Length: 231
Image 1: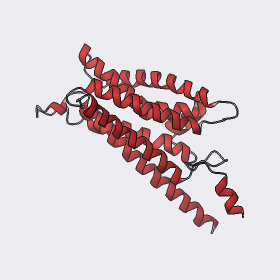
Image 2: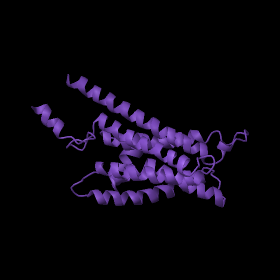
Image 3: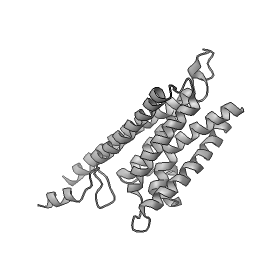
Image 4: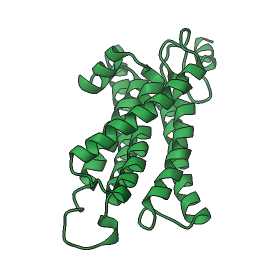
């Protein structure tokens, strides 16, 4: 009977009353966000006949718009202190997170050598928006302006619970993936995909997906470790 009641206390994506989420719930979230990433590429290719190589700015705008909508709707469900912060407040602060995150990502990219011509700057802005969707938006939806949580999770790298792993690991995966994606750019191969920010985008998306897989693995490992301790 107790097990039955415990199961009933979870939502359809596996969020329980103790502000946690099951590994299955996290997998569901990742599946949805990954599906809509693919939808973004499909819309760009089939509705507008563009891709990251032929028109990076338009493609990134399409992907970011679709992915942001999905990410903010889902991650706002996992906000801290829901009794004090309504769902719509979480949605609103996620929009602010998108803007501030894009600004910080753009400044970081320019500081690290991204081209600053007018055409390149437009590409940088659209890339930075996508990076903000991967990094700042989930964290802003969950943590809001709580400096203590931001510092503990991202600076000290001490996430607690599955929700924080869902925010932390994919975000770092996107950053590391984007960094690795920049490696082929200076090489003298004269390929179209070497132009900024094409390969960096592929690297960030790949790193984001790898980060999701890694975070799931960590959730399962931690759960198994706790069960062994209880045994």
